[in-house]
Amino acid sequence: MVPPLLRTLSARVVLGFAVLIVAFGVTTAFVVAYMDQVVDEISIIRTRYVTLAFQTRDLARKEDALIGYLDDLSNELTPKRVELRLHGYQLGRRKTLEEIGHTLDGLRVARGSWHRTNVEEASAEVRLIENEIPQLDPLYKTLLAAPPLDHRADGIPDDHALVAAATQARAALKDKETAIKQHTDQLAKNMEGKVADTALILEMNEARLRTFTIVLGAGAIVIGLLVTLWATLTLRPLRRLRDAAKRIAAGDYGSRIAEKGPAEVADLAREFNVMGRAVQERERELVRSERLAAVGKMAAMITHEVRNPLSSIGLNTELLEEELAQMPNGEEGRALCRAITREVDRLTAITEEYLAFARLPTPRLAAEQIDTVVGNLATFVREDLAARGVTLVSELAGDLPRAMIDEGQIRQALLNLVRNAAEAGGAHVWLRTRRGGDERVEVEVADDGPGIPTDAIPRLFDPFFSTKEGGTGLGLALTQQIVHDHGGDIRVASHGQGATFVVSVPVASEARVEVAKAAPVGS
Image 1 (cartoon, rainbow, N blue to C red):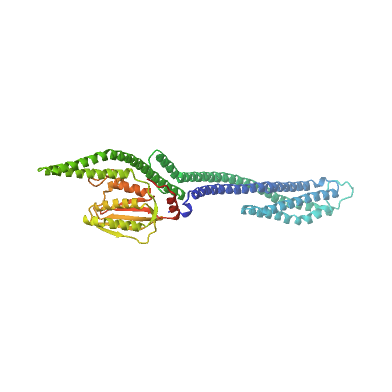
Image 2 (cartoon, rainbow, N blue to C red):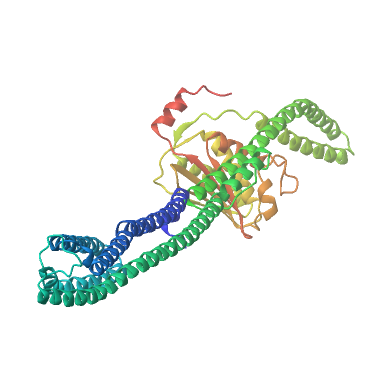
């Protein structure tokens, strides 16, 4: 079952494009977010890890330079110079350690537990070095009290006891500074490894980003193709509408299409089928009108040519019958004359029916009570039908509004239907009136005869088509023409037992009454 939201074509198209936009939006957002992460990693490598690598390597070089100076200390000329040089090396080492600390502090805020682990490991190494350096201060103080110099530029003799203590202090410092150098070398090595590891992770992230981008892009393309296919399938009913319109334009007015699909398409298909039926009905009505016009002209012409000879034949037959009445053996001739007269009368009635069909006047519409017209008709034909063994039953609604009719023509149309019903072979004929839909009143004429063959119903109102032997086939055609001229319609139904004709005419309204008064009187 289609959800209410997707019953319309516009909703389906909008939903399809919304899914497509969301797919591409998610892909773009993911790629942008991942790119931001990659940019952050690049920034961390450039501003943190690479800086740490340079700073730790610089620390290791300074530590190596300090140890080298302790080896060459005896080449200095004055104790003051030794003090200044050692102070400079120590100050440089301290500044480098401070810079490393600041860089590590900046790395602490980086996203990712891996970075925090690296910071903790490096910070532990730095704290170890920083804790060992103050322990060397007494040894440096002893060394600076009497540095072991090979030559003294001031000429002051050395205190041998102090010199011996300073020499021992220098040896101890070299050992301890060498141990510190091992820590700085390890720290520098670790930072270089972290740079390499981070670069490798960056490469992996770049490869992962490329893979995800390809996968998401392919997924978005697949979704786009599916949305396109869905839109194509959704719009397919429009192609059926176009093809059906072409068939109707080519004259296939019976073409119909399935009333299914989105709400707009189903509504359009429904209206298209209504249009097709209307066009088909109008085409049928046009053909019928043209046929009726041709039949009317032919009937008028035949009637004109036949009426006068029939009148002459009838008159001469009557004269001949009078002559034969005076002859003693003229009974057989008189019987033949009476037969000729009956046939002439029958042909005259047929020509009158043809003439009535050919000269059907435009109805003079007026607001009339349909119950009154039907009641008068029932009174008029009840005895005639009773003589044929048919019972007429009239069921009048009694509270119907007035209808816009020409009383004489509607009476003639209903009389044709009642006579046909009486001749159908049943025992009853019903005349009913009721209120119809869409501001109409209806008259129903029904019988309990054998019914009408199903294949004969579509041709029932065609001129010269009759299901009765000897019928002219003009009665129902005339009845339909009268009803249509009143702006009404006539329906027929037969389900094996009996037949029902329903005549529907418009209810009288002020607007229709004014139009009827203003219309010219037809002849």
